[in-house]
Structure formats: C-alpha cells, structure tokens
Length: 266
Ligand code: 6PG
Image 1 (spheres, rainbow, N blue to C red):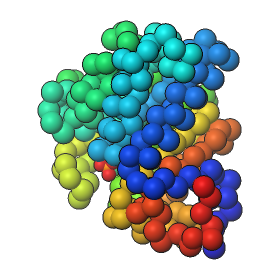
Image 2: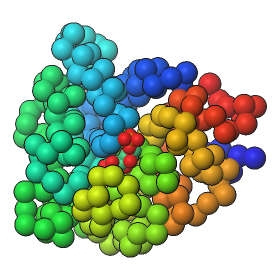
Image 3: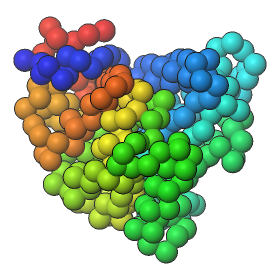
Image 4: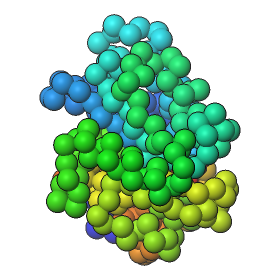
C-alpha cells in the first residue's frame, strides 16, 4: 500500500541505469530552463556518490554538442552547489567535488565562480560546515532558522540504508533545524570519513527535489519509503518532503523491484 506522502511525490520507473540517467538529465535541464525563464538564474545542489555520474556526463555531452540549442541548459546562468561532501581534499578519489568536476564541470560552460564547493580545505568539518552555511545564507540572502536557502533543484541519491546526502540513520544531523549545513561523523558505509551535509530544512525548502536511485540493493529502502513504514530516523530519505515544492523519485526497475507492479507509475 503506497503511503500518502509517496502519493504526493511523482514516481517514474526507468528500465535501467541508462534510461534513469537520461530521464534525470532531461528533467534537470527542463527545471533549469524553467528557473532561468522565471527568475533569470538556476540554483542547483548536486548529489554525490556514483549513481548521478552518468546523468552528469549526459548533461556535459549535451552542452558540448550544442551550447546554443534551445534545448541546452544555459550554464552561464547556473549556480552549482553540493548537497554533501566527504571531508577530504578536492582531488581525493572519494571527493564528490572531484566526481562532479570530472563528469560535468570540465565540459559544461559554467563560470568557475558559479561553482560553490563545500570548503574541505578548511581545518575541520565543523569549520567547513559553518563556512558553507554562511556562504549559502549570504548567496540566498536568508537568515536561518527564520528563512532558508531555496534551491530551484536539489538532486539526491539514496543509500541502501535509506540515507540521503550525508544524513544517516540515527545521526544527530537528522535533528539539526537551525543551520544550513552540518557535520556528520563517519558512517558505517564506505568511505568512512567525516562528512558535511545540507540539513533537512534546506532540502525541504527546495522548489524541486529529485531522488535518483538505481540498483537492487536499494529496493528494500525504496519499498519502505514508498509504503511509509519507516521514520526519518530509520530511513532519512523519507524525511525529504519539500513544504512548498515538488518531489520526484526517478528509480530504475531493480531498485523498484519490491514495489507492487500495480502501483508503478510510468
Ligand atoms: C555520498 C552521497 C550519498 C549517496 C548515496 C548513494 O556522498 O555518498 O551524497 O548520499 O547519494 O550514498 O550513493 P550511490 O549513488 O553511490 O549508490
């Protein structure tokens, strides 16, 4: 039985990881073009991990193909942020920034001044989180907890334990309600390094959140979230419900394998 919250989200099932990436790249571009048309610019926080990399490469390829086409995203009007980061140098193989740089930033015509990495070069995860919070508060002209950075799009992944960004089950970060970014100690999941993550209030302030999920190892978490039979403490991703925004789950067949077929929405 699908939960009411899941019914309020849009669920799209992709045949495989390739189709999933194509769906995500198309929706990412569509939302970016809509934001630029409506407000003159596009603010996006991208996901780390491995799943989104294929989508980023498609976005980069589209840009390289024909940057002037009416289909392409105008990266010159896009500000790119990060949903979370491992507390490692930017050139570390575990760095989300490095993955995004290699798969997208190298090819997208984005002004480096419009790319806003989480500053892991600073002395501690706490200092890094505080500085990122200040950067976003200034950029968006907000003052948490009274007002929150409102991204046009936040792209998120899902761990097989139901974590998202670096909001892990049972972590103190789940209850942070007064800061834009916070720290998250090494989880049990690889890589076991300190992390910095956007908090629930920021995720839930977004105009649009997209979850990008692939693989049979995610199926149990997807099912729990679909049925609503878990708490944010157990499966943090279920705590992402934009209060004045849209939520889209892009899931491949393998990750959706435990959802009863009758409920799948194409
Ligand atoms: C990270 C991500 C994390 C990721 C999930 C899924 O820093 O690892 O932000 O939340 O999205 O763990 O990772 P995969 O896409 O690699 O399965």
